[in-house]
Image 1 (cartoon, rainbow over the protein chains, first blue to last red):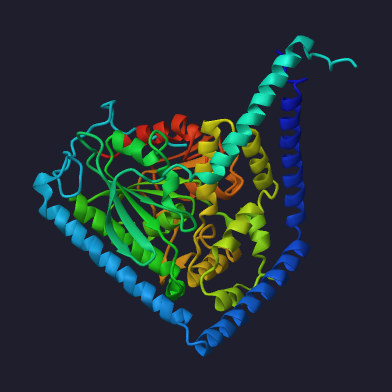
Image 2: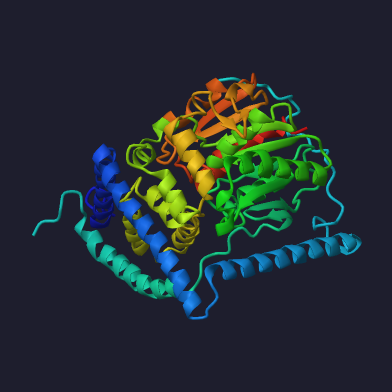
Length: 129
Length: 360
């Protein structure tokens, strides 16, 4: 079998690995500069501003089209979430009521005793660094 | 034409044949890849003990005949989903803990809804965590609770532990937890107060979108995503590689948005003023000083962590007030420290040997 030094696949993988390291190191250095931070945040700030304006425009547009607004959809989602929470609570209560019939380890079933000791009976050493 | 030095000419046909077979497998498996979903993650049986807005408290069902007296509460990072600690059977930290006899609870997060943009650091440290600790105590019937915090979940656990320092927390375990935020060099530069207008951002978008958080993580190693896709294509014939790739890729891209006010506090108090490191951090008027934590603590850090470099985490143990404290540095990166083959061999047994004796 060819050794790794001459295996074309291994060489390709090594080259990719080196390129990744080199590019990451180069990019990290470039991104450490204050100029990069300034440029990135200018672009990011503009995007956030545009996003806000677009959101407000869409809200008005949906209202004009007689479609539910974002706030109304959020309200509906919240009500659904509340219904889901109540269903979970009902499920938990049913499981507790059914405790006697549940397989071991399931909600509401008797739990294992809290008597476990570590394999080595030695007390915690409090080792410090 | 001569073969390169070291290449045995007799091996060439065999090698070509193997590569052709892999190429065929790539085509077949490539189609499979796009037509199937990945493995089911986070499937260890659990019950939702409590759910409130962005907060979920799970209790995992016991897998041992007897458990340690002290229950364990895991606090997840607010940017990521808890299933990184519960990948698939055999590669699940939760399953490992359950089988070793721990009673495990997890505080996990869902995406904060738009109306939750006003959640502050106070809500996380003075409400969500104490509420979960109280519920764990009620559910388990035990007065003590061990807390495990991963990444920023570790920061929240430290803030909680320093304020509620006479409280029920018996042991604290932090995984890759930064305290010196100046040392998160690139994040510091991205959020340079001269150029980054956090007020404008939060006032504009409400909750900070997950795409922005994911981009900032990916910018730490901008070539790595492309390279990992090349590696996927090369190894797509290998089912185990593909399974592992899909698990980690899904988790890494499943980033959560951050509540706006909470993000504002992280930026101003931690990124800009480095208050946790400088002992000037307060949450809701309560001083949060690391020296006030006196419970046993284990801090696990990763040797090749590009998200939380060691420089950002190394002062934690020195600043903690506990007598019983230990830092352990293990091979691996930010994620491979806690999940995957590396973690199974290194971190999990270490944690078990440390925590077992302190959980009785």
